[in-house]
Amino acid sequence: MRTTIRDIAAMKRRGKRIAMITAYDYTSARIVENAGVDIILVGDSLGQVVLGYDSTVPVTMNDMLHHIKSVVRGTDKVHIVGDLPFMSYQASRSDAIRNAGRILKEGGAQSVKLEGGRHVTKTMRRIIQAGIPVMAHIGLTPQAVNQLGGYRIQGRTTRAAVELIEDAKAVEDAGAYSIVLEGVPSQLAQLVTERLSIPTIGIGAGVHCDGQVQVFHDMMGLYTDFTPKHARKYAHLAELMKDAVSEYIEDVRNLSFPSEDESFTLSPEVLAELAGEPKIATQNER
Ligand code: KIV
Image (cartoon, rainbow, N blue to C red; front, side, top):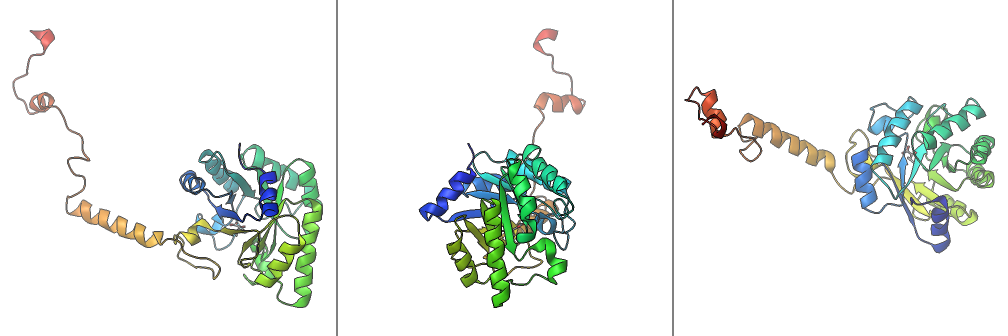
């Protein structure tokens, strides 16, 4: 049985911090699950770190489903959250329910995440009423990058902070089982965390949240176009991988790859026949 939303709620009550990481494919999902992470988010950040777009805006439902399915195939214990991509829930509530349903029914995830506060609570309620758990996401909401005018820290003025707290309360009232706080000053994230009974999961929101989420490619040092201030590199895989590929190229060119151990051989009999040597009679021919 995979980790459920009840298990996640219990972690806040017990004061156990929640570790969430994004993953987008079978192999990395297996690694992340084996390391013991609580939740995998198949985030629409795959638009940048896997598909090479400059934002999450172009990501489609088909992109999301393709990646969610591979993460599901690579895991069997961890809770999987699938992101609803831009314009899969904004245009109408029926779109929202249908697309959220596809993430569970076709993708195999256990819950969905969508961005927004008070203005999405009606949609959120309808999705939850359909039996689909929702993780909310407020603060810096990357799908609204064009509206926000860039990837800016949110809630810095008194008015913006009060609005962010209202957004957080509204999504909790709407039934969200947890909430991502992205790009929010740590003191504000602490206030929200203390005032909500659902777990807060921070990214660029300081240490006082009930849990943290990081983008796999940022923490592994795989995505080198840009490193956000909030990201800590736990490995430098891009450099390691580049060195490994350079070594391979060198080995191919100087004939040290493949070795005898990495090759397959013909039997001496077959080799002799191919070379036009007298045929060696087999047992049946004698
Ligand atoms: O898509 C994503 O990876 C996210 C995280 C940044 C929370 O939404």
